[in-house]
Length: 257
Image (cartoon, rainbow, N blue to C red; front, side, top):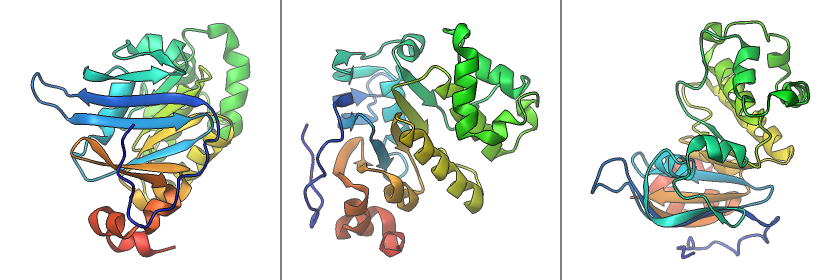
């Protein structure tokens, strides 16, 4: 994989484990002849929390959707534990251990919280008890309100249900598209704490975020996308303090601790 190292950045930390997800020079888009990703690459290793930031229209959400088979990959490849999963359908990816939480429309509003979680386990219904215990340990608020309709929940609560449902299948890797979108500052902080808890539980996590500063503060490594390419790569701290990344993508926010 070819990357442009940020000016002043030190070497990336040693890998935490084997490669789980590799995106290799992927070109992808929604319409024929119109590419959003233009040779984009990414690596996520076992146990890592990867952050993806960049300006609007850079292709951040498209990258996640390409990994999850929701956007057609025209060139390049997506690998999961060394296996080519390029353009595999979402249900097959879930069975292989990939979870995805979209930014919007991520719960079934007419169903209860428990029914939403059961929908996440439709391929392995016999594991319900154990998986419920796992997700409610991370999201105890969910465990106390399993009978409540998801449509009556706040935005932050819906996000918890969506992440919980994605965890029901015990994924090896979790793809999160803007987990803090539309939340108040307090709820945003809660969302980031939950993401860290999920990652600490052993789930390799790839997160797209508009809140670039907070994303880089908690991630192990980050990628800055620009015009469908990975323009910069480094640890979260390196990118947070790199002058070029600050000037182009973070502004004065990147200078605050």
